[in-house]
Length: 124
Image 1 (cartoon, rainbow, N blue to C red):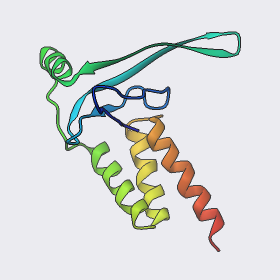
Image 2 (image 1 turned 180 degrees about the vertical axis):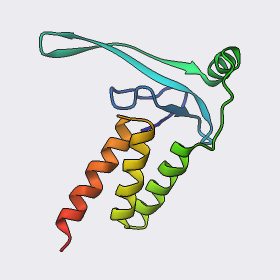
Image 3 (image 1 turned 180 degrees about the horizontal axis):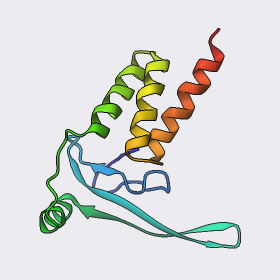
Image 4 (image 1 turned 120 degrees about the vertical axis):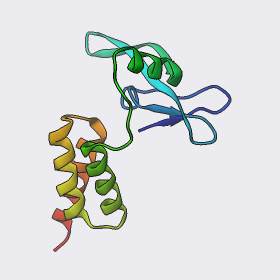
């Protein structure tokens, strides 16, 4: 999930690496990244850093990519979240699986697929 930047600091963990970083107003200011290495069975944290949103937009423009807030994935993901908030877990699961087919293996999508499945099993 995304982390918030307060006083210029944010916690970046393996689970939030690659996610958006927000300022105090809730606006995306960059992409949070964490590097780590393994020594035996222990993860050793490396550097945490933020790629500014302006840099991301400039790179997207340079490669001819037009950022859009509307895509098949975004529509499925928005419906997933709305259904989960409403407690409509079967519908959330259907939309999450559709989102996972469009953009496979995103950690947040995988989490919501696992969570509704567990909730459905608990209900009679």
